[in-house]
Length: 135
Image (cartoon, rainbow, N blue to C red; front, side, top):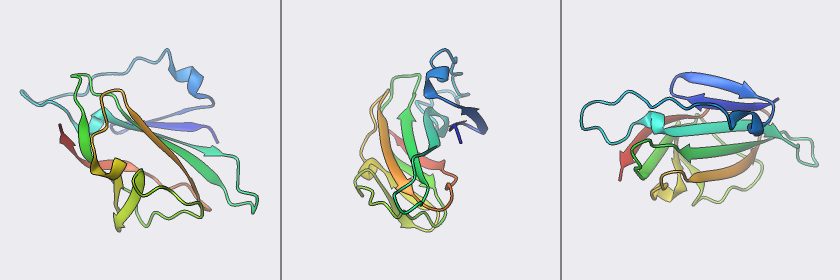
């Protein structure tokens, strides 16, 4: 399985991330005076080499692509009953409750910054931004 790119309500697939370098990112629609939106957080997720036990693994990249140069904190994702057979640093990503996962310990993700981690489960969890705080 290749890399899945989610931008707003659109999902794109690519075999290698290198294919995305020429891709033009479209600035999200903003309300007057709005500094940032959920669409400024992009989630890339793709299959990686399985664990020695055969459990599939996935790499996730969460990026701040804010066009106005903003830092974004309090990033929460819809994540269902997210769990992993591979330990994930809870300061990087953790499930707080059903369908509520916190990114970067709630701290700001700087403009252009990326948080990444790997998880292991029998299936890929759909992840989407539920709420943010514009810093």
